[in-house]
Length: 164
Length: 143
Image 1 (cartoon, helix red, strand yellow):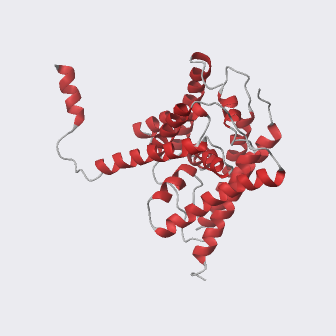
Image 2 (tube, chains in turn green, cyan):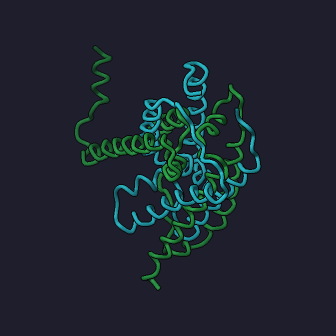
Image 3 (cartoon, one colour):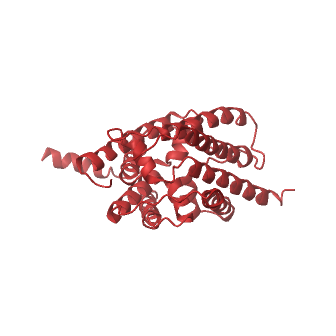
């Protein structure tokens, strides 16, 4: 039974991915012009995306409430939920940068992946750029990680410059 | 020209919510596309396998739907490539930094009633609205 679990988990992921992908196609989230039509409040505004997000959030809010009452998911011994709840500068600056990216071209990560599958040439530019950006952030994290808290680094430098 | 498509938008949204719920119910995982994608590039083998299958499913789901229903794939012509590259780079850097995107924070995070995800979603949505305004109406690009 336990040997079959990784296979079943893989099938479950595949199934969830398929349903997710169909949802992106049905809702037309895969059309960057449709997305920008929603983000462009000052233009010929298209409210459709509000219903996409609204429908997704409402249904999953109800189902998550029920599902998370279980002691564990069906195919694993515990839920893998995010542990962080802090609202810090990192979260907000990251979200600002993502917002600029989303608003510039109308692509968030899900539709970009979906677009690779049906041969949208734009995705062949956007996806490598996404991976490059994510790689840079991860590289910065790794550079910072091993440093123990020794001497107070750049903050004091800024202060020094300002004082001068 | 944009047309309000409430039915397909709502049905599509419900499918996305259903997909997120299936992944949580069966595997106990959060359906955050950026996190799943970036985790695919580094990490242990079983971790990579479920992520790869989710991504494969997503690609097949969209392509399969378009083929089976005979829906023409949306194509945009003449959008500036430098803008695509910049948009992609900021999206990758920003979602890796904020640990989530439209699906991870915007759908799953809000569904978990996470204030952190609410702050992220409010921020990227507001900034995206402002950015689109600046690009289309101030710079006159990309329309």
